[in-house]
Image (tube, rainbow, N blue to C red; front, side):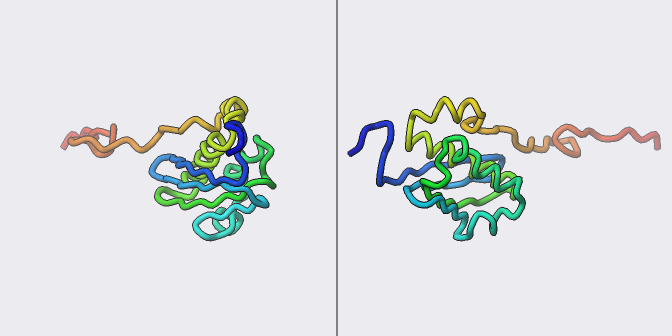
Amino acid sequence: MADKATKTGTMERAVGRRKTAAARVRLMPGKGIITINGRPLEDYFPLSVWQEKVVAPLAVANREKELDVTVRVAGGGVSGQADAVRHGIARALIKWNEDLRPVLRAEGLLTRDQRAKERKKPGLHRARRGHQWRKR
């Protein structure tokens, strides 16, 4: 096996999450092809904003043309799924090469965004919205 810092010819797996979306990411050596749920990146995430989010960890690590990424993502909405994929790719890159941790950390790509919808409480209309006062 190669040295611990950089692996060659292997595959790394990681999970990324955001709100209710979860992305299972597989990273392997290749030509830079990104496949999400069996579809190309541009097909699954049509907006360039979402595509840039997904590619951000690879761009920061300068590995866009070296690694193939295969993703299975489920749950949540499209934007949450894009963030989950980004988080999963960043975590897989850390497993791939531990030296990338400070660079990815500085860009905020390793932090899991824990914000999620707050649960509804009994006696309220929504999580915090109470009843409106009525005179009659």
